[in-house]
Image (cartoon, rainbow, N blue to C red; front, side, top):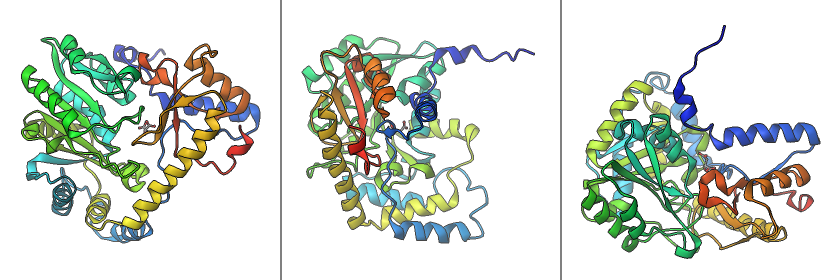
Length: 382
Ligand code: MLT
């Protein structure tokens, strides 16, 4: 029997890292050698021992295996409210926040809450592929705005003015940026809030890398801008901040109408963030392990520099990122294109990089290099 699948499946690609992981498995089988995986950004610094011990306690409590109910537990809500106040001086009302099953739960489901077929959403190019896929899935249209080297990978409002139409409902914004590593100051974000208000569109601000910054730089929250909550929501992630990626924990904060709309969608697609994980999130947010965070950043910074030295030998050039977990590097002029460059590196040297085109057309002639990888044997690969 031929299974008749949905036409919708043709409207979006399979996620880049699902594809890449399959290719990696094939290459490892064919070469008999483990690849050096500088592809997906998987935070790999072991989490704080204190938090893991707490999680061990939390899973043993009698309510741990029960459905957690919908939305935030009181502990989770209060801890996130207190953290936002201390970290950003932003006050959140109880209905201005919601726990997520990772920030990707937000990027995946917000389009369902905001967009109808044919609606448009401004989307960074290059940008996180999780922004555009789910938009295409529901028949809405990502309209790409470019983050170019000439513009220091910053947003050009004049370009947005040209691309906004009557169908535009919102804009995806992500700083510290995956993949470019560029950051944005509040002064740079202010005109964006004004732009969104002028056109009656919302801002979906992905702040997943807010706590992964280097050289003393501190990333802001867009909600620090007065009146931002009229138009903006912000996604946060426990994955990068605490190395909890596999636990799938995140949050959305900001505009209460958007938060409620996403909660309605999620009421049909999942049954809430589990009680032990909400307890863990609340505990981590209210018991910072400053020593662990310092070491985590140091580890990425050291690996960033070691990996940087090695990829320079391949003719790759890049600016040192101010935040995030990646080097956004230009391929040599002699290389055909970024896909070919990565494919050859994988078959010839068993090194995995992500082709820049996985992040949009403007990623051509770039590759993204993850700095969270085991590099104990890096000398053997270069
Ligand atoms: C990345 O590698 O871009 C992310 O951090 C992991 C993901 O794809 O969600």
